[in-house]
Image 1 (tube, rainbow, N blue to C red):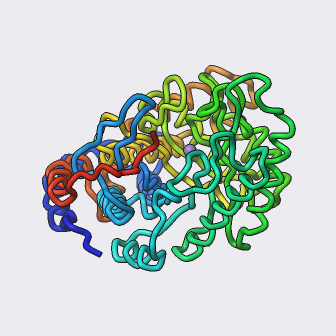
Image 2: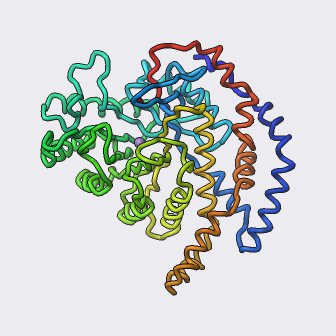
Image 3: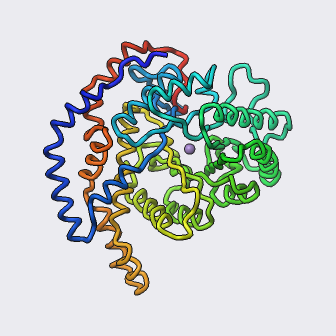
Length: 433
Ligand SMILES: [Mn+2]
């Protein structure tokens, strides 16, 4: 399998040489400022270097809306092309060593060939994502009126079998988790008996759980609405929590940041799921109105920071959740170059994490004990407004990545070259439409 154009290490090194003197100065100044606050910058940088997040294979193609999709230049035509794009993101950011696959969009003819190809690119695989929210060509029964919850047992059986197939493929490529999200629900009051709908779901998902290998995790993703506009079977974290409790220790709740009503306090949900030991992981993205799937931190960076504060707080506890939550991105890119958007998101996630690391925890605890609301809030704000970019650039540089990934990506002409290598095809199934 050919990779086509790949950005040379020497090219990144040359670009870094140009950016390094300024970065070093900024890093030294920030180091001094943090030292006055009793924070060792080196420790923060090391932790940031270790922060990793999985990229979604479906995120490297241009997405679309209910209205249209505007394909970009040099889009990946198949799963191999997608892996090359994902590996490029990891090469420049050094933060995305794993790719989450979506079946059947990425269904490999030979999983072992795919695994070897990924190995050659020095990336691995994250969670498998099943799809029973659309019909595939040649599929026997339709999911128009549901999948795992369908009133017809044969449709449910087909959807269960598909999820088990995802596990089987995942086992061969080295994945350790299955994420299940269903679009099942109703558009009209009365269309669905809400209670028996959830009962059927539980019956189905128990069969999937039974097929899960011992060292695998099952992530249950909830969503308030869409594609169904009136009711959804797993509509919120409470329902998802009930489901994972029914299933067993290998099941946990997946929080997709876009799957809530506007203004919901997501950091509070995160705190609770951690407390219950049931936070499986995240699908990071951002939104203004609904499940907009915009780049993380683009609309509500403070919320993202507060979520990382909760994650960090749990990780410091003796009773912290094990295993720790999995970090994944789930975005759709309609007006940007998907590779740039994903690198932008990776940077914003590391930024929120670095800012959370700067919170004066002892001071905050003491403010909380004294019920000093204003000082407690100001401690969070102080960490949030710290410009941590020099830490992010230094972390990438030390790990062999680019100081400025988007700049290096643009300078390399990667997209243009892929445009030549990958003539547009009409059958692309990348992106969520
Ligand atoms: Mn998601």
